[in-house]
Amino acid sequence: MISQKPDVFIIGVHRRCGTNFLADALKLLPHFQEPRPLAEDYLLEHAPLLVEYARRTAAKRYQKRFQEAGEFEACQRLLLRRLGDGLRSFLRDYIRPDCRLLTHTPDPDYLELFFDLFPDAQLVLLVRDGRDVVESAARSWPSEPYSYWMYAWALGARRILQFIHGPGQDYQQKWHLVRYEDLLTDRTAMKKLLQFLGEDPDQYPWPEFDNMPVRGSSTHRGGHQELHWQPVEKTKDFNPIGRWQSWSRWRRWQFRRIAGRELIELGYTW
Image (cartoon, rainbow, N blue to C red):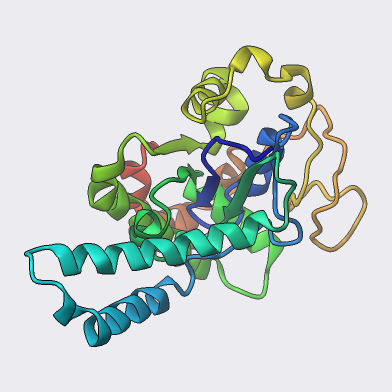
């Protein structure tokens, strides 16, 4: 039996924002399944190539075949949508037919094209305080300076904000924004997300959620020196929120100059 519920795509503001955590949390419901080993799908990373393919194919071969106003444009949109259907079918080939597809990508590249390709899917946008993202990224990949991660987070935040105030306006019932911090501190945030996805919060295994292991932490690595994504038991002192508060005044000023506006627009405070 094939699942009748919409596919779920999680797209994050930037790496280190918690997309693996949220996917693991949803997979506590056994009918959700990720297309391993393609769980991070990155389907939008080169989406403009598909847009260009649809445009060129339709313009060269189909345009003269339509006489009524709007018919050709509808054909072009349908072609792009069917390309998106093929991508979703590709991911479903990696899950059981009776499961609900759950996939995620940590970066919001070409987010504005999401519903052109996947109009029947549900989109979860995950954001995290940019200061903690930067701190986590700098610890995970210290070869890049803090400023690099600040600019990268600000770009991802702008892409999400542009989607919210732009193409997302036409699909407000199909996407949901959630903050990583709220998922950890306010059960209401997870309940609202489950309701958006058509799931019953009363059927959710809350004790398992509260005791989920840590995966991919920049600091809590279970004795390993290198960053990894194997489950590590969560200790009582594990707290991924507010690590940026150890920053110097200079680094705080630097972040505020580079990404302060985006941080405020996403609902965070100083």
